[in-house]
Length: 229
Image (cartoon, rainbow, N blue to C red; front, side, top):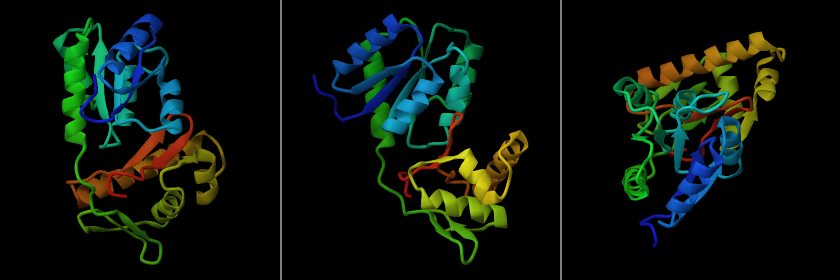
């Protein structure tokens, strides 16, 4: 059976038998499916090859599904489906608030899951937007809606570095070096605050968009080449 679109899917499930069951079942519908066991393996898989949809188990070791979903939500082109044994309404709300597009309780029917994936894939396949643009000369960032945002000196340095490595991971160490900061915990916190304020500035200036900047767990940051960039 062939799918309506060539969707790439990553399943994050720490139980090998269930992970393989889901991988085989969804592969039957024509999807390209990979399986990983935790958040670190997911990051490595996405670095190797991007995906359109991630299926997350809620109760993962080390970094939980809710935490992974929250940081993946920075990418508006990525679909997120929660798959968990927890059926309480509060858990469903937390899952959806963390950024999940759908929430399924185990055991899930493969056909129903595949239908949700197809619908989500169609919704994500929207026309390309006008590109974001960055000007170091005017210290400004322009959104796809032609909204110009003035940048501070540090924001300008950060975006100049990210645009120079568009679509590629930029390590925290390289960011520290560009900003003239030491490689330590304090610098890491300062960079996170810098990025958080930049996201807020973009959202305030143009509420219709979000900065397509994704955090890579323990690796760095990537400014996505898609989503109009």
